[in-house]
Length: 230
Image (cartoon, rainbow, N blue to C red; front, side, top):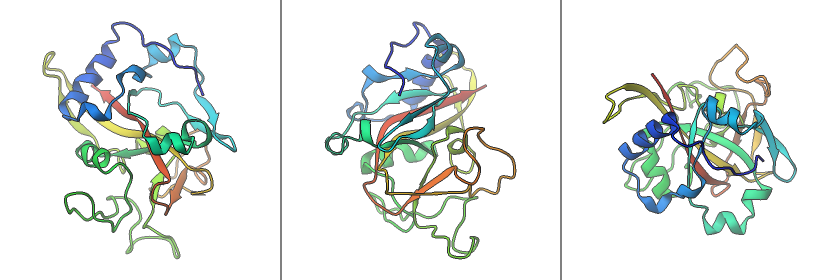
């Protein structure tokens, strides 16, 4: 895992991402500003970081979220008790920005069929396998994550939202994803399930780019990622 480092001063991209974060109106109780980190091209290059690292016991590869800005989340007592920051694997989960608040309030990723806080019943995301369209024997009632941000940022998972910066009035296409730890041994490694025929990430085969688990509590969040494109 790369060493923590201070962000570049006056990174305009990070400031724009922070403006989008503010628009989500999340409670400060979730956030840990001391560990915010920008992975835009300039910030990433300034730290001389690699594109991929390993973590966990046993060690597993994961991609850095280059092109994104991470707003750190407070590490929960459960994550600390599990020694997740050192022993668990790093992965990503793309989602719609309108889901972020409810996911944080729940504290975990739910499985299709679960009823979320407030009474909303979860279903499979559009474009992903579901009960009427899936390979024989495939279980759609799981949590899906990936060690590749390129996979997790696909539109099937990370839905694009239009964002107009309140000060500059620039219009952006915004996406969000969670950076998380997942318990080794809790998940199965499998192929992409979005119908892609092209290579998604040069580090990970399309046959091993999606991780799925039926375990509730096998995931701990530690970052909310934001990406803006003009």
